[in-house]
Image (tube, rainbow, N blue to C red; front, side):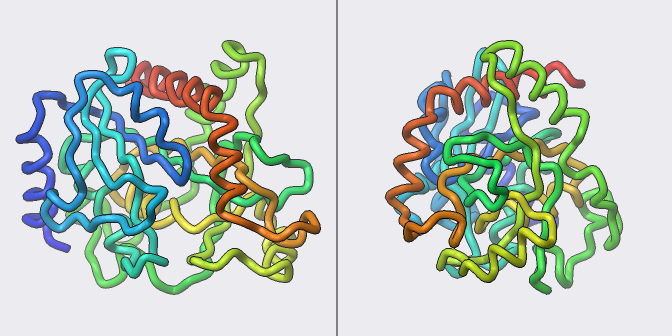
Length: 277
């Protein structure tokens, strides 16, 4: 990963549109209906962007959409990259480095996640307060993060901005009457769902939700000095919480059922992030 590679990808994107966003949004599995709300949209397939890998997951469109949401300039990833597709953590996080080179300052990172906390239900929205990652690979292994404005060692204590979480939670509840939960996200690489024993372990360690994405991107965002708002949709209860087996169909059905509320949440979050200069 070199500065020239990152700059080249950013320049290619910016050459396709006159929009210059400061906010980016990454849409997780089943959460792409918000993409239809983007106005003045320029759609750029990932395969066309230099060094930016394509997604192989059929539930992820694999298109970068640059346009406006409620007149606010945004860059929206309709679909993301995962390790289980054969990408390295660096490749999963590469789009965030490109966003930094484009001038992005804040990012909303969403995902569909399994509920570990037994107080959660499928369809709940959880603002991510922190994450747990066990695996020794990382998006900056072997890299010098100084190209992003930090050194090799950088702080992760308030990566999921508490201030932005509380602002968005308050605004969304005032508008919708619905309270948002906050919790810890555990990263597991997949593609298989976790075992019941793994879920019991994660619960004991303090995790509230679990998923196969987000963390590579968030680590890169921290290195780049990009403020993060993380949102998990509890698409199913994790293995062993209920007696039923897990299915991707259940994930997609839940995400489809909450698409109206999810759209409202993203509209609210983008507005709040735009206000916070």
